[in-house]
Every structure is written in C-alpha cells, then in structure tokens.
Image (cartoon, rainbow, N blue to C red; front, top):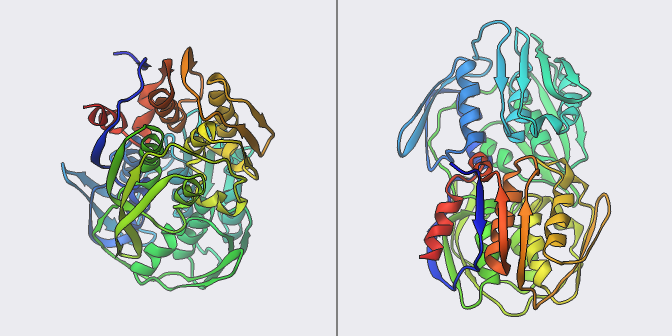
Length: 438
C-alpha cells in the first residue's frame, strides 16, 4: 500500500451534500469527563480517529471500561479520582496535544508515578504551559525541558489555585479546569479568550462553574469535588474538518455544497468570519442549540472574486487550526493579505506557519514570513502546471489535507506523502473527496 497520493487534475464543479465526522475536541472531552462520571455514558457520532482511540486506550490503562460499537461508544465512569492502575504505567497520547495536556489535569491526584509519552511530533511541543499551573496544585513533574516524556506524581491533597492563562490556549485552560474538579475549594482562572468547549460541558453537567466574561479575558471560578453524572452526547460535526471543503467549494467555479450538523461554537468560527471578509459566500441555516453548543447546516457557493485582507489578530484564537487552509484563499485573492501574531501556529503538530509559506511558495505565490506573521501576495489567475512534492512535514494531518485541497483547486502535478496522517483527525477525508468527484 502506497503512503503517497498523486493528484494531476483539478476537481470538476459539483453540487453536493456531505456529513463530516464528529468534532475532535468534543470527542476527547466527552471521553475524559465520562471517565470521571458515575455510571455509563454513551456517545454517538464520536470521531473514530487515532487521537480519540488513543484517548480510549489511555482510559483503559487507568481502569476505565470502554466499548466501541458501530454507531456508538460506551464508557463506564469511575467517578472523581477513581482511576485504578498499576505501578510504572505508561500512557501513550500519540499525536494528540488535546489528550496529552488534558489528561494530565486529571492525574494531579495520582498516588503512583505515571509516564506520559507521545509520538515524534507531539514530543516536540510545549508542555511547560500546563506543568507550571499543575505544579501549583501540588503535583510533581519530571520532563524533557518542558516536553514529553513527562513523569507525573500526584498529591493526596491538591490545593486550589489562582492562575493567569495568558497564551490563549484552550488546552492549558481545560487542563486546569479538570484539575480543579479533583480539588477541594475554589480554583480561579483568568484566561485569555480561547475555545470554550470545556466550559460549556461543565455548565451542561451542572458542575459548579461561574464565568465572568471580560473584553480580553474570562474569569472562570470552579468549586471542586462535585460528583459528575453520566451523560449521553451526540458529537456535532467538526468545523475544522469542514473548513477544507468550505475552502475547496469557494475556489471551484460553479460549485455548491451543504455540510450538515456542524458545530458552530462562536469560539470556533473565526474561519467563517475571515473567509467572509475575503468574499466567500457562506450561509448558516437551521441553527440550533445542543447541550450548550450551537450547531447548523453550512451552505457554501463558489465565488469568482476574492479580496485580500489585513486579518484582525482578535480572530486568531478562533481560527488557529484553520489558517493553513485560509492561506489558500489568500493565494487566490486580489492583493496582499497580512496575517500576524501567529507564533502559536508553530507550536502545532508541525511548524505550520513555516509550512504554510512553503506550500504557497511551491505554488509560485510570493510570501514574506517572520516568526509570527505572513504576507501573502495573491494571484487571482493562479493555475498550476508544474510538479510539486510535499513531504517531511512531521506527518501533520493539516499540512496533508491543505496540500490536497490546493492540488484539486489549482491544478499541477502533486505528489503528497504520508496520507495516513489523516487518521489522527479525519479518517474519511479522502472518501469525501471521492464523493465530490462523482
């Protein structure tokens, strides 16, 4: 079986309806919180990706019973601090930063040392951002200069903390929130604006959380040691995965697309706001509330004229996973687009700001890139004939999928390596591409 994909032709115009797999952030959060609940929790439309499977494997090692059926997943929760495990256990979190960072928050009460591992890509990422606050609870850490592998030894009596999370990392904030669940007293987090899936789940589960929203940050107060009830959850479709097809449809002449039941959480739709600013035609219909999350059907139509923008940095945290695909719209836009304050992009599975520039340069698009910004000189007439090879990108699933969308939209002769990378977040990506081609 080849681990490469070859694309030689643009995709033809289409008018389709598609369904995207479950939201990865919510799939992992559901599993972790279900493990801390009492009784059986059931999820439908759970994303069956490597990241989520790694989550279930880690929970099994912690004494949690899980079952995957064709259309649902069951977790029998063990309650707060109910994990049971042997000495010297190792939890392999694979490629998942969400799993790696959040599960450590649930281990601050561990009575035995636990080793946390990740793959080559995850082992390059910063974990000091969660080690610092979790130490304040009383947990002890040994790490590779703030990176994996990490050894954690919990404390019998974690103490509530006050912490200023100034990065805008939902993973860091969520790790502290999960640690607070297992801690007597009130933990207070002053958190820079970021995704709020954890807060919404806490509210839905009626956990004692209070959120005071300010202009630039949220003040989150959590009282710990409240029992969690088991809960059933139908995972909405993933906006980050949907973004690839929103962009493809925008770029392909005379095309229309409907994506059903997508999570349009306001902290996640920066990509839609940015694309609309650039001229994309996107409509949200059948909007409804589901257990705190907003979901909707997304309608997209192709457009002939796209405009360059100076992207407001205030939208960065709400689109941090989608910038690579947004850059493809900038490549076709009329004028120079400017994206700044994006150093967090280089803290992902690969240095994505660098890889975004590399992909565009290989397409003949001029860029000026710094450590935290990129200027993209768009070409509305862009049409490729040359050969392009994409490889050695640390198997970053978003680099792979962005390259596939670029090949289908702009032409050329593409050889894109490591197609198995999509298994971490979006296993059905290529199947949906095939469906659009029919």
